[in-house]
Image 1 (cartoon, rainbow, N blue to C red):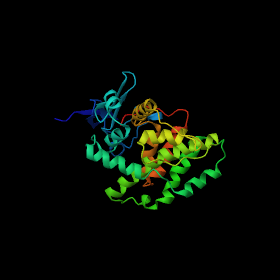
Image 2: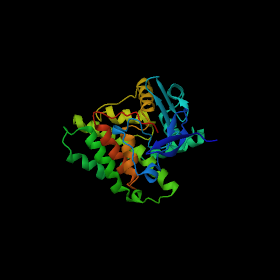
Image 3: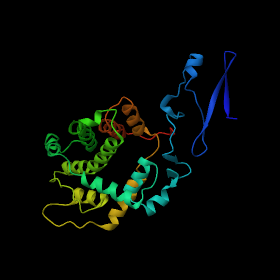
Image 4: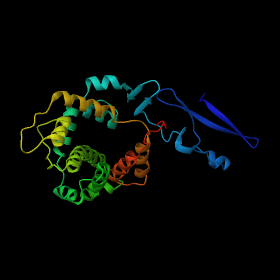
Length: 271
């Protein structure tokens, strides 16, 4: 028999379904509470509200626990690449060797951005905050790929949008840094993996040969894995909220970047 909770309101008994999360957390389902009682709930700051059911990530900061799809973060950081972990988060399973090769190859293929995006950088003074540039140019990708606005995209079209976003984000982020320090922008190199290419675009100069340090590549790989997902925090919630209006993925992620830009971005809300 399914577990339930009972709410007594004005002498009337209301039954609330109880759900159990992937880590055995318990939650009341109050989705029909207003229909049954006319009441809504108040949870200022979403301190005790789960907005959706998900098995993507479990985070317990007090206990030092972080799991992606059930895998301990220590295991993933030690044995996996960032793109492997990204695949895991997006599609639910670790990729096979063939799947990873295809996924990585597609991302490498799409790291180059339209030249008109490069021209947009000329409109930003070097003093512009990097998050403002990153958010603006991420949203601008919608203009270059207007088909992403279609809420009825096929699975293949959605996958392509995901690949384009992941691929071009590293280029835009690196160019944003270069713009902030007044350096010339570097085009991506398809002979480098994701993290090495990011470092190359960030720190190389056209005047001298740049050697990618494998120790730094490994560190960047681990940092990206550790920051790949953090449950239903402020920026994640913002992306979901904007996306629920059938905004493009680029516009939704741009909104999440703006949320991440704020001083207080963490939140305890589970997903």
